[in-house]
Image 1 (cartoon, helix red, strand yellow):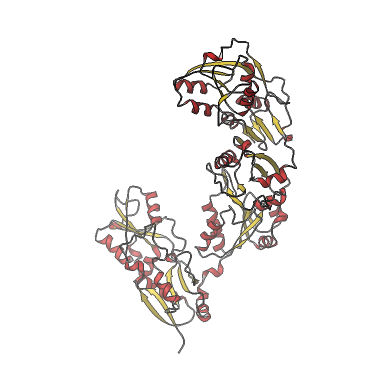
Image 2 (cartoon, helix red, strand yellow; image 1 turned 30 degrees about the vertical axis):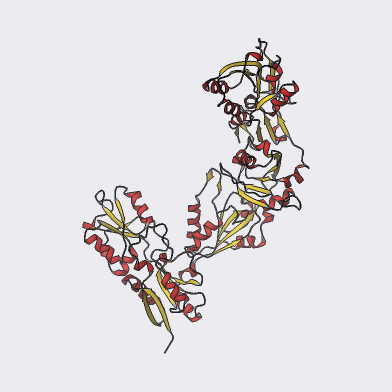
Length: 633
């Protein structure tokens, strides 16, 4: 007498038929004993299967326990009922082929989905089926149903519901396919119709050997998530290169070298997802990997940097492994690590930095971990928000920052700045990594800044400032005098006594101090917004605004709205410098704008489409808003 295999199964008619189906596929007869059990899910039919907090092992917990306690050798399940991940010590030793993965509709009077009357009650146990149904017929009333297939069908027969959605394979196994009015065009669970044989990880080899021939996964390919590194093909690992040589299909993104890939014979599919330009959604990429694997292809998903650092690696692993596809991850050099070596900026250094954090940067509210060194990935579009958040957190304006583009490529470039400078900055070049911290000083001191200063006092001025020949009132006639620039201080040459003095920022404050004036308030934003906020809770006052002929009206308008009396006095003119000579912008890393007028003059001289390699630095929020209108290519 041979050894007896103990098979545990739920006790419904469908579950027992599934056991018979698996046994019928075996190439030799075996002796077996079926242990029937009732799972927690079977015992608690009052719990909706659409409950978000439903335990993943709702229908399998008791069967798994029996296997782990060696009361049973194997379990046989609908594969879609298995939890992911499987409990420790449990594995699938065989996955059978699914003959039909569709859903079917059972309805009174054999209605089809199209012919069901409005507000018909349609029963389902699946949130996914509910969503699919309502996408096609939003006028229907979807209700949750529980119980065996036979019990659910009885609810249609007794009028409790008008129709029922059920897996076609379940009807086939129960011999009830004739009750279906139609198959539905729904996207179903990827393992619907498949049966799974589970066992303990230490199951007897002879049992594993019996069921291995049934396992359709033998024909599956394997998916390898491979890190290409930061971009230089010479930095890919030997193991990563070997995976490319063995691949039959390669899915690659923007941060890999397409020319380098031509040496490999595999089919190549681009699935890049650069900011604002996604060739495929992540869901679509997941599905492409899955379909390629189950068709038997050896699949490489090639990612820039390392697959597990800001690269959706775990999402793809979970998607594939939950569908029983084998996955291997081959590390790559992450861009943040490569940056440290290739710029010689140490991310940690004795006595300077003992901690480093890698942070995802493309968020309007960026994270600011309390680490000595911060490395922001994909943060170029939010550089101002990053700097502002770090300054609010308490980091100093002089904290050094490095912006590094195209790490490891011949076009790698480094721009050095500070948090204070970047508070109102715009940078469109990508891909860029942003390094913040004292360690940046090691490399920053070796580089000379190449700054294009557009202000009137620079060697390359784009504007001309001249005083207006107009009568100037005495400050003693006002409660406050507001200076919006150092030129207002220069060309308002009346004695500065009698009124309280308000300054737009530190440069203007310094000009006032040189004239011996005491400043009552300096705008914390270095712009009109700070002045408007300060006056908001002041009693009605008489205010003199000493500024240019191009001063924005919003300042005087807002102060008047607050109830103040305002005299708006253009004490100087701000005009484009008609003698300005075009510079070779490729020689510069930064362009400094001190006012909206410098931005307009820059656009007039250089046109609308400026190279994206430039870091635009604005003095104050108002100028920053003007800088954001510059178009780059």
